[in-house]
Image (cartoon, rainbow over all chains, first blue to last red):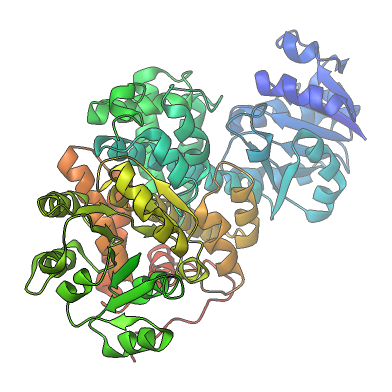
Length: 300
Length: 304
């Protein structure tokens, strides 16, 4: 199976390297992305050529409008698409935009699968990274090995758009896990608990969550637990908020999470990682998680 | 060592049950039938808390609220009348830390040591003897009582020398659990309304940083039509209120927990005082206008 890859950012180069281990991969040689072009893949001169020479094309871009541009622009992928080709879209976007795009691509005989990745740290935490996929199930089964070589956790979620919708559900819950953990750490410390006692007890109790497991033990050193920039997390949560409006779901917690992540991104900058949110909670209650005198076991 | 246990309700009874074979156990409860069932197992019934205190070296309490603990210790014929220097009181109530500290201070004037050791976990773990016991208080007193606590469950944590830290930890665990539970259910309700299968969302959540106690426990149970909690909603509201007060009193904003508390209160007002926590699934469903599971666990009737 011949793969084409169109993407940007550090994730794209890492993805191409992973795919190259098991597949033949072509990228576009535009000179725009030296990291991607230098990853060892074959290089096509333009997008139509990449489409013509690939059975499966993976797109990983920052927004749905970028995806449409790369497909439908005058020199876009569509010029090289033909019946039976599969496009795997890993980009951030709304579920219904993926379903609509899937209909349009059907006119070209191509099949679209929306298959975004959710991760907080691809290299450090492969066990908490998953691809969620929507689209025709037979097409999904035919390219499952491709997705599995990107990330071992692959979940088929249903019709076109379902992969994007599932990613937004995951993003909403993951953001809340993190905020709830910071909030509980803050109120615990202010009531005389040590961070290390909280990490020990809460992770063995019914409060346990992905953030209590990773964030709580690192909090005393302001340790890094994620690579995700605040700006990216905000974009995901914005889409979750939009999906809630569209579906008619209340989404009280995740809408609040959207607001809090947005406020943190505005304060610390979009490129700061989501670990910076700890500082919002410190400021909110006038404490310093790294101060052993207030947050360490000695005080308890 | 002679042990006394006061409060043989659902939780206290399950905890005390582990002590009856291992110690000379004296018990006290308002329910005569419960006391009789312990008597049948070999425990001694006490006529009053004062009498129980005289017959015990260590007294454990598991009562609904700190106000009940106050009454049992300092009320007429209370523990304080029968306690003497060197005895130990262990409060397993999900109580108010500041009140427990006050009780401990007053008892220390009698030479009596008191510390808190509330439990955290499902009723089944209390019965099985694997529940988490979250203790705090002076290390030497804790060590003296430790064999008794370990008879209840080997999973004993000591989180600091300060009395009440165990109850604080338990309250914060409850808050973390409730906030994560409803943040998960509302996001899953959105996904269901969009048309996602519950199983796919559960799998995605459990393979990402979306994972939490609800995604590993309650969601698979909903998918298979099984009940996953057995807890009175009114008690959950009480626990959440106590946890919120820790933030209110220490000047900590609690935006996430505020939503969870609000939802629980709405649920209690909507469903009535006999409602179960499990019925909150129906509240989340009706708020979003969707169903979480393909088939639903039968609603527990609130009528007898």
